[in-house]
Image (cartoon, rainbow, N blue to C red; front, side):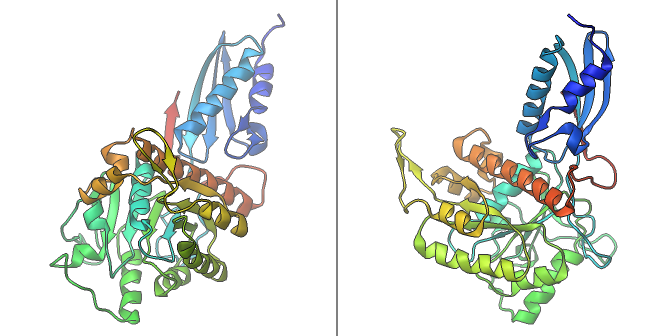
Length: 368
């Protein structure tokens, strides 16, 4: 067998493809610190998504590439750099890297359930996450996250968000004396409250801020689009035609406001009975139809599972309460698909071949 050199090892690793971008590490510029010490190889790889599955796949591909050289010992170090949205000098939350709107265009499709489980799944991946309940008239976060109380202010200027399960939280529900109290505001007051929830809350450094929007295509999305650069919107629907009509309106609004659509989530997609048979209770193909028409991916098809509703009512969403159950795994996969979609969109926006580079310190460093 030919002598193994550092140059041979570097060439083999440079040809490994990153599964998120389907491009080589050399082309992406994400391979660094390749070392050869005896029979052991070590290297550092930068990734733009926090998902463990991406790291595992890169490791598998690296091991396969080195096997052709007769190398079996490898130590990989991963730098996770979450790409960041474009910001301007007057952006109200410049330390928030991505702002994700969870929208539906219609009520009753499980948007708040998706938003809460998405935020927790992102947090469980090791990233810094905030969840803003932007549904002023029907706040769900206090109930779904099992948290009550009033936010405080350390300096008398900025509000400190509440926290649960490692997620920073803000909701109009935290400011009401009675959770059953009705909020009766005109549009101007709603606009002012949303501005405060964004700019006057001390969100700090976040990788993802998830906003749970109210149904419809009204003032909330318009206010947000006018005040900050949004990474994109996640559209929640059910398979029924009556839901699709309203989601079309929300998608159309996003196009007019120049809000990128990150993908479609089809909730209540199917039901699995005790025998394992799958039933499409509300029809099927609705999410795929939307995705095809609007040229965006379906990020998840979430089943009907009573455990999901019970977990939300109990204040601990299923991703946190039972992360290994089937429904929780679907939400986790949704979050993984979303982070990879965001990473790809940032790379396309930059217009270059290299992976997006985030200014500032590395977010996470993981050795495998």
